[in-house]
Structures are given as structure tokens and as C-alpha cells.
Length: 303
Image (tube, rainbow, N blue to C red; front, side, top):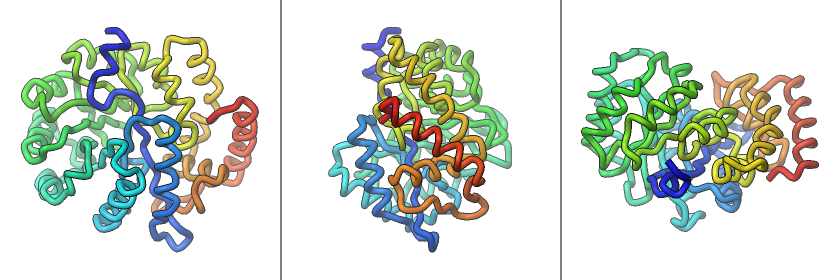
């Protein structure tokens, strides 16, 4: 599958999993959020993702999400697609949420597999089928077994894609398995988009047939991540991927989004690195390591 064919698929390219900045009193920092959205947009991202894992969706209220969506849409003037995270383990409640979304502001939905109650593959199929039947928006499946305890297998993905081709359009694959990318690409039509959900594997995933990524690192260095995806066969892309190695490790060393918020704060992109419990800030030792990495990447021209 060539690069030209890849570029035509819906949600191909670079999506950024935006953080949800908070002020020191834990209220949403809408100013930092909109500034960050513009920073990533200027850096060349192809779409924004609000309230995924990185956006601390479990601890952000429905009202806060709506306010954030309106503000980001307003400041970006509708010039970039916005994808909203709508996931959970109560299917009927999710259907109700889908019925109350401002669909005119959205390009799609990112929906993680149900967590904790660990449904079977048939349960996963019926869950996503019901979501697909209750929204006019395209759905990006989100498979991240390390957080949910359940793996959305390729056969189930293929079945969903076959039965709902206008709704099930992509998958964010974060199992960390390179062979999974190959299987997903080979078992689905060319208009289905496989996205990397692990920054440190994005370059390898692209070479295996993925069409892009939903990236955490793109909050900080959108231009570099974009080049790793767009020019994945080039020596420059490989160099930049290797140069970001310590960044990949440090951002996730004490959990996401604790790492990315600290890094963004150190670079002045958000006012505070505040998180909502049960998430906490990174250790002082990791913070110092990040400072050194930021300095090194600045010398290399990372942006």
C-alpha cells in the first residue's frame, strides 16, 4: 500500500491527544487549552482529539467537556477536525451521551473498549455496533488492553468494519504489537485507517502499514512527529524518532498524562502541571531528567 493511497483515508496523518490543562485550584484552564490547540495546529497536526486518556476524561465533567469543545472550536475557527473521546463501560449510558453531542462541531468520536467488566468479543461487537447505530459521526475504535483489560481482536474489528463501513472508519491501536498492525491492515479495506497509539512505536507502525498516529508527543513537538509520519521512509524521520527516544521514555515513566503535563509546563505551554486525583505530578528526579532532555532537544531544533 503506497503513501498516496494511505493519505486518502479518513483520519490518516497526525492526530494530537490534547491534555486538559488545569489551574492550581483544579479548574479547567481553558486559556492554556486553546493556546495549546493553536500551537499543535500551527505545527501541522491533521486533527485534534479532546478527552481521550491524555485528556483525563474520567475526571472531567460533561459540562467542562462541552465548554472546552466550544472554546477549542471557536479559537480554531473550524479549520481543523475535532474528535471527541466518548468511551466507557456502560453501553446504554454512552448511547445517551451520543444523543446529546453537538455533532455539528465534531468530525468524529474516539471510543475506547469497555474497561473493568471485560466483555467477550461478542460483547465488544454488540457494544460498538450499538454506538455505530446511534451516531451520525464516524467512530475511531480505541484498543488499549493495558488500561482496559480487554483486547479488541482483528476478527472483531473486521466484522465491525464490514457491517458498519460508514461508521467504523479507524482504530487507534495501542497494544504495542507490530504484528497486530499488519493483521489489521491486511484484513480490512484500504479506506480503513490503522493509527498508532504508542509514540515510541509510531515510526515502526508506519513502516508496517499504519496510516498515522494519535500522539501524546505532538502536544510538544508536532512538527517532528508530523515528519516522522509523513516521511517515514526517510533518514530524517528515523533520526528524529531516535532523537525523541528519551522523551518517549520520560513522558511515560511515571504515567500519562503526568509526564506530558510536566514537560508542557517546563516548556511554558501550559500554566501549571496540575492533575486531578488519583493522578499526581511526577517526581523531582524525573522532572530534572526532563529538563536535561528538553535542553538537548532544543539544541537539535526539535519543534
